Length: 401
Ligand SMILES: [Zn+2]
Image 1 (cartoon, rainbow, N blue to C red):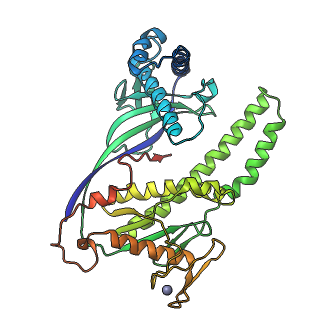
Image 2 (spheres, rainbow, N blue to C red; image 1 turned 90 degrees about the horizontal axis):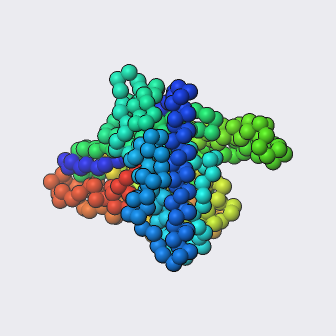
């Protein structure tokens, strides 16, 4: 047996019920943060025009002069600077990759709706309230138990007017994990089926977006006919955001169920690395792909696997759909050809089934000998963690909403 630890970030979303006064304070604090964010943009643009690059420390020193201290908790103001810097970093990394980028844009009220209490400035109290510095004790419905150490809380106002606390926690999981791998599965995610596994199970696409598409289109059409700034357009906006919310809930529910199934029934799960960005360029595929949210599926699989102490890893995708899972020969086929028929060994299978078998085999080949089936336990105690973590970020943000 081998024990591994891993930190996972998880977030919980709880409904907040601020009083009228608290709501005003929150709105005021968020707006002050927004203005601060825009000030950072303004200062950096100004400096840039003068041929000079403003740095983090300089901006940090300006904060006390830029923000009303009685309204905004000082650490929350600091977080605005981090947010600004992160956005700058993202821009510069995109530009390094050769993408065409613009400048950071000023945020209007409609696009800035939260405040971040990082490490301090908040306290969870016994009477179902959270005390926020500069705001007060706000009633909160904790509908589930919080596990782990709370790192930060985002207070967010939804478009429909409800307030939420997004509580981000860090968890350290220690699980014993047997070296012996008995139940190994390979998963091939795809366009025609959501998932085909190497045991021959097929999971069909939930078609969630497709089903709501008509409703979405109707709502968008109505929006375009309404007068800008009118109360009617506001109502329609609300309706639209509710449709989106529902899609998100349904999709998350589906992904939680499928990932739970695999984690409960297997001790080793292999998938292939996806090149989703490239696939999104293909217009025909892009709708199904964004609907499937495979990345989110893999994240859920991964953190559930870590929690349960089982192995989850990604294998190289090259040729998994082309090569024959029985004899290894390449059988060229376009996306339109849905079966794998090997002229050499005669194997006839669904193409996705063939791919899932290849993924499983590739995964097994990547394991050290000690992990493979029927190997005695005393063989080399290599780190399971290394394999489980090698292709993924150590921090997985997972939203439980
Ligand atoms: Zn063959």
